[in-house]
Length: 413
Length: 107
Ligand SMILES: Cc1cc2nc3c(=O)[nH]c(=O)nc-3n(C[C@H](O)[C@H](O)[C@H](O)COP(=O)(O)OP(=O)(O)OC[C@H]3O[C@@H](n4cnc5c(N)ncnc54)[C@H](O)[C@@H]3O)c2cc1C
Ligand code: FES
Image (cartoon, rainbow over all chains, first blue to last red):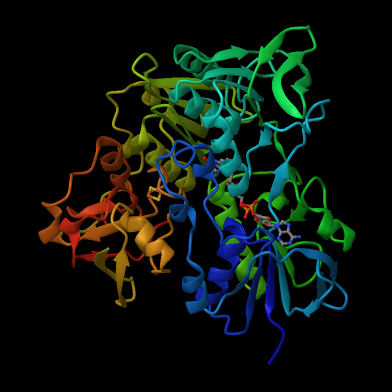
């Protein structure tokens, strides 16, 4: 029997590669190696429903080990890959054993950026990335009244919303002048600032945290560079992630803050593909794009499987993303970078609106709050290259789906 | 446990015991039923867990909430009167033995 296709990393993306290989007809072995001790799971609920106690742990797992076995996917938890040898098509596990591969998929994900502060090592200081992190955060949250969140990005704010809903005193400290500055336009930052404050969360913008304070190994607060101190029995840091690209880089695969791939998930090495949070994509115009989302993990995973089988299946769909905070569901379609104007549809006061982002007359992206129908239409419009005019988008009486309606068929039925 | 029969896009059938309180999405995904993607993990944000519920059982389950109904407006496969998002339907004794059909496309 020939060597198997080996997938390094059993997260959302690695799992997708494995399943797509099977559904696309690969009959050989599939080895899915994951460093974590558990089967692949959904990460988004870790800062949302699961942390809020609305789902039990068993409900997080995407597939049961039995379901993987049924698809003849050889899943091995607790297996960390330590080194790759691209020329010999072998890899070395942390326990020293070696494996040959026919094809290789890297889906090693990302890890939390460490807090570069004195006191970061104290008990009670956490990042939020894994099921294990969440278990420990949930325990610490139950045992404290005061929480400090360092970083006002999606994950920090989702966590803040869960903690506030449990009646905790929550302080969010953000270095930038607005929330989620990398991902959303200023109007949404302002909306979420007001939303969190209305729920009793203290949000401080433009602050730099100098140290985590503690006693006898336990954190009890943080100190800012301006001397202010905030009490906390639990400190959660959400200051971004770093792609796990060291394994690839050490093997000579091209990386640039992520494993470099094309739209078909191919790396610089033959028979090696990569997908998900560990990658950065070189677009046709030469620019680099890094997405950290379930959609990218899944779509790039499908492309990666196809590429290993010698087929081209570029990830071309418009990016989409969501975030749940309190009773507000944000759904984003497209990327707003480069937009020169934004049009409001709906009502900010009613917490139900969308922002349509344009460059000239071209629609680039639509951010929807509690407007699932507009979001779904926006994804279809962006994929089809259709767009309402800015005036139509702003007119809530205008039926958006008429933009998608195809011309009437020539023959009547 | 609630016994649900999932009908996969290619016509294959899988009878699955879904723990009470789990969603029909979780029951299908966990057991590797084909035809469901469930990208958002049950957040009612992706509409890739579209399914058709046994007509006879429809009346026995709570109707779709506004946000689910809005997502259903634009699912990729045909929208039918018995279309639901499987992550929003909980397995209860009232669903014992029903058929849940998966569409050919989710995304
Ligand atoms: C709390 C939280 C909330 C989120 N919310 C959303 C959201 O609302 N919407 C959204 O779209 N996205 C969200 N995301 C992002 C989304 O979860 C990720 O983009 C997605 O999980 C990426 O999948 P992946 O498989 O590429 O990486 P990962 O899920 O990180 O999986 C990589 C796996 O590889 C393993 N691994 C790494 N190195 C090795 C090695 N050398 N050997 C073996 N195994 C290895 C890791 O242990 C890990 O299990 C959220 C993420 C988090 C953490
Ligand atoms: S799993 Fe995403 S809407 Fe049901």
